[in-house]
Image (tube, rainbow, N blue to C red; front, side):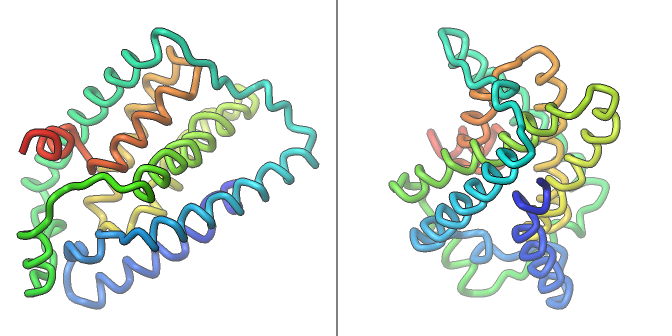
Amino acid sequence: MSLIFFGYATAASLYGYLGILQSGYAAPDYAALTFSDRDNYNSIIIELVLLAAAWLYLRLRRFDFKALDFSAGRRTLPLVVLLIVCAGLAADIYQYLHSIVLPHHYDFPQTAEAAAQAANHQWHLSLPLLAFSLLNGFYEELFFLGLVYAVPRKNLIYALPFSLLVRFAFHTYQGLAGAATVTVLGLVYILFRRKIKTLVPFMLAHSVFDLFGLGLSGLLWALWG
């Protein structure tokens, strides 16, 4: 399942990370992390195709889809806020500590084009961005917090570390610091998953981070900065 869900993304991400290394830096420039509406539409198509392939594979394996809890209720929104605050704060703290211990991991090429884009950047919501963020939150957490937890309980001790490794691997296009921060978010989700059985709050919180960037500070800056 990991190959179906993230095989292509991992290969593309590792290829992107090799490009970062060849540039002599440890992180990509701003332009490399900016996605156009066309990029978002392409990503939506890819994820829908892979979801269809995953569904077919699970049907052939006679997977019980009732094992996946998509229930929502009055507690859903408060849980989303809780996850955003806790995971976002953990990501901010981790990035701060990482920047102190390994500052060179935040060394990125400051080209004139990237500097101009960063200076002129203003967050704005677009339909393709919103659609992709919602789909991607569903897509990724369906695997990490849904299908991974469908394995026999005795195998979770192996499945959970593997899921964190996969989450790290297909985010390496952001550099090691970015991929590690995403992994911290995933670790916080795992801690909360023990108490929160429904997948919906995790998916929605993930979508918020896709919209506003990693960490609580990115969300606050986008809303009130």
